Length: 461
Figure 1: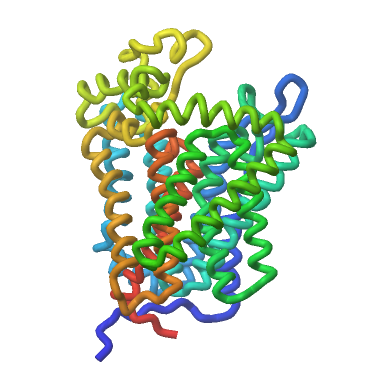
Figure 2: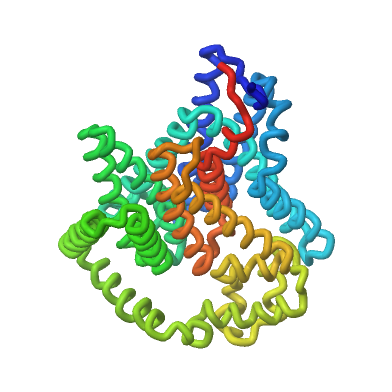
């Protein structure tokens, strides 16, 4: 007897095509949204944060409006699908507590600005989870669209290392402009889809599509080179940690040393060929990379205790601990920068003076602990831990709702989540609206891959 909940779209061809088009625009367009301006007579990106947020917001609500208007059954059924979903409630809590914190924040407008972002992204999780769980076509379209967008980001970025593109000038103080305006905003975003790209490569190998394999492998190769010349230590660590996670989990699953060695050999081959390419074509960057690894990364790995007292990021964290002690319920969403001058003691001249005012901690866990207190911090931590629990269950447990593709997707999603978790620890990942989008998009993929929706709903054609 069928006890599931009936769920159906308006199954006309034009509805499906318009949904696909709106989803494509929503995923593809934001990385390229910008507002042009000029600096010393040359065109540059003066705005690359808010315009991307505007693109995400406008395109998503267009998609959501069409979805809710034409998918009459789903409009009534969505809450019954997700109201027990922990991911949805964690996001609701972050949104609600950010709004509540505006009542005691020094600058309530900043807290409301943060709340508006989480509100849109929480609704995004609701809508996209329904689309992805109902029909894998939408999930595949979103994956390929995201990968395609960053293929163009990488292409433009690599061209810019050789030829000056006047309207893509980097913002002052950075080496890379790309379509993101700065180094970290570009390469942390790029790293947020790298292991999704690896899954598409695995899928193409399984289906023996030679041209697709060559195409995807080329993208991985060029993205890896682009990431290496970024000189971003957080990017290096995130990619390395994600790769080691893959080898560990793949070793546990396969229990075959030859399989593990083949996988490790592929990673080693990509790294070696990329290193040789950088050495010959980007010799200047090669010297910088060598310096970063030998002088900035290895010493910290050897003596991690020196991070707090011998680095500027560590010293800002020390200052922030005093803020957390005084405000256990937080200073208000997006209000850390307004309260920091009251607590600065380690970097009194470098981090805050007439010309420089530090805005972020470079550690989102500490940042959220300071801004949203222990309630918000525990919600963020619980949200991430829950995803790992769900993914490990998908990878290692037998489920009637998952096949081999789903399990392997779960494996790469776990690697991607590890990489994002590392970036949260060493950078201001969630400060940039587009990376918030990538974070919640990853949560949506995890939900749909787990088959959780299919356990609650029987879809009708």
